[in-house]
Image (cartoon, rainbow, N blue to C red; front, side, top):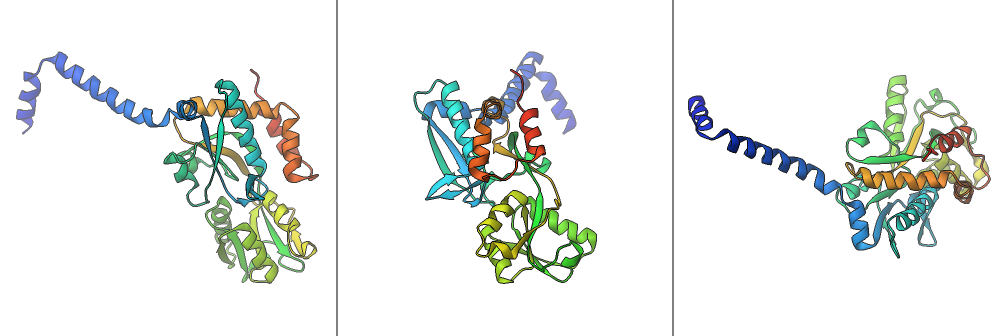
Length: 295
């Protein structure tokens, strides 16, 4: 077999062999790059930007009076406005498409959405599947519990604790409990609102989520005074807007729009519209300043 292959190769002119190999290599490279490099072209052709949003991640992404709302949604609207201007489009239709924790990244990879606007933590594992913009927010996992309930991590021994399934907080909580040897039962819950309700009814002793989300959950509780929000952070969660990989031209336009927003009072207006008078953390202020890149 080896001799036969050798005779076959020797019998072909080297120029033909080289041309064939080069053509095959170019075809492979083109096939790998082409599907992912067309977001801006698609927006120009269709006049539409497809934005995926979650309806269960207030104050970042939710529905108000049947319409998409929240901090991340407002940033995505700003991105849409900048794209319309930078691409010289007369109009740009922004189509908001609901996604879930479970299908949000698949929606990107399959082309159902162009940009994911929610409470999405940047991780190395996720970067293997999708790309991310500049950071849009920094928060961290914390815990909400009832007055008189477990006020320390070790006090969770033997208790039921809730967490939103499919989140980085879910993964981190299970790992932290195991490493600390704490025998708490982790209950996966389908939405943050359901987690708060389970906490208020006594079904669980504590509910873990990103602290910014817990603030809103506590504020809208049936009896806010009965709930306590820990001041402790158990992790740090850098948020960003997600998009398909290998599309640097689109990512650059998204980042330009974010930088433009961070440089102006618009970012303060967006923050206050979604967080009220809650003090902006020094870490968040630093994030806006550090990412206001020079032209």
